[in-house]
Length: 255
Image (tube, rainbow, N blue to C red; front, side, top):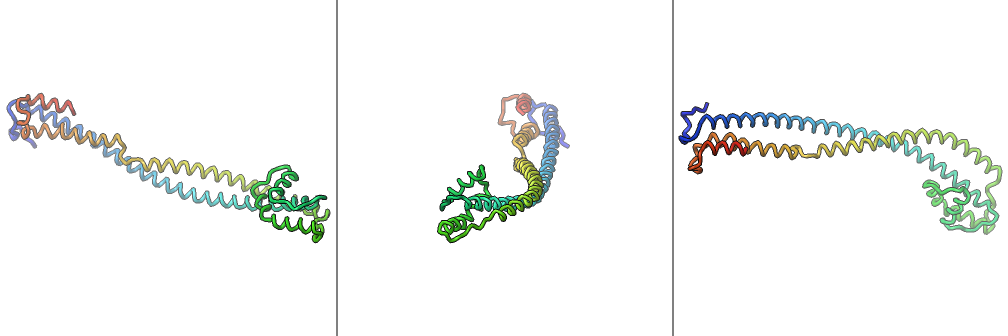
């Protein structure tokens, strides 16, 4: 314990005033230090919670992405089969024309739009591009009289009737998978948004700017409010001629 008699201070200094200032400052420093300690512990716990939540979201994203790809694969398979059937029907109509000629790929696309009264979708365009040389060969053979008509009315009717029955069954499967795919896609977007938010919170400064300012203020307060009053005797000669009590009170006021 610091005794008044042990302190070598100038005669104009009120030692009780200095001790009061030092004690008040030390008390304030201790209170603020406790607050910062609690805040640091709270931030640490929040960071741990965010990392745990990010890991859960990552696992959920992987699972939902796998399911979405599975549903999309089923949908793409059905649409590819529909596209092949659509192009088969287009070829029948194209080769059944009274006047026929060798068409470019773009001209075939235009013919398709004329026959079907709609644009080709992605799958139909891919199938048409893949079979272009085959169709071109058929047309050339017909023009040269080497290839007889291979599409009679009976087989065409049977093919259309069969295609309709298959399309009806596949439409149900397609709708079911599309609904599931849209749900998964929506959940993936939700998880990605949450993941970005959590990462932004986690990447934020461990000690925010207001806490850094608080630490700096804490150090300054401890120096000016505690150390200076207690060590005044060792540097009082620097301020010779200045009333010591006024000086100490002024320092405390600055703090």
